[in-house]
Length: 289
Image 1 (cartoon, one colour):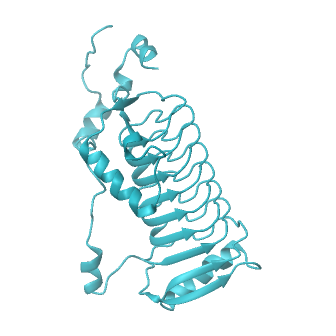
Image 2 (image 1 turned 180 degrees about the vertical axis):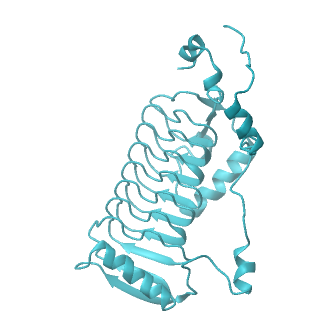
Image 3 (image 1 turned 45 degrees about the horizontal axis):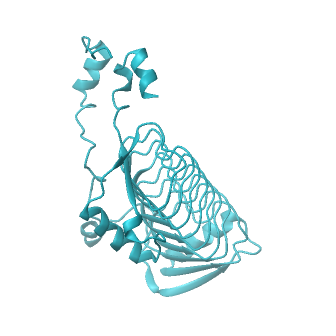
């Protein structure tokens, strides 16, 4: 294999370095904390669109005859009135329920959701007694989402924080473009799970489809079962005591786990052969792929 050589930087590369675009070290970092929400609340500040709610103040929404938009507006209205616990009855697998909630909230959904449920949320704790469709909790920032049954494809797409848990099986491309947080699957997951994963942790208690962790940049995948195959640049790594202690604590919180117990888990990380992909010669690219 030919040795890699670095040519003189182009004008575009020089400018990008001067702008500080190459100074961030991604390895080992978590989400950056830009401000202390508790400190800001003391001075009368909080997140945009957030309301002061009381978890002991409870309300119910019967979604039988309501559109998705009407349900979401009703949730916002109740939060504005200080309700911290909201129960949605008869959701009827409607799409886009509970999106854009930027608030501390205890949200209970008695039934199933359709596509794109709970997207762009930042703060609520959600429990769903039924199933969810495609792209549940897409771009989730913080909080918890617990699904008692199964989930569709692209579960937790581009998630950035919080805990997203499905006790059943999920579809393909789980955690695609994952940027942080934790995704836990109590059962099996489909093909291309963890595709282009960048940060965070994913826990799969069952089996996985083809190309697990394909093109992952960073982050960790734990699997208790067997993957059909690993994707490009996904490699096995050694489990350590910190991995096992973290798994024990996290899985105990949500009462899930593999049939063989914590000892059944194996660890997958990025091989990092694609980090400098553009610098590889054509023959070397073929070897990587």
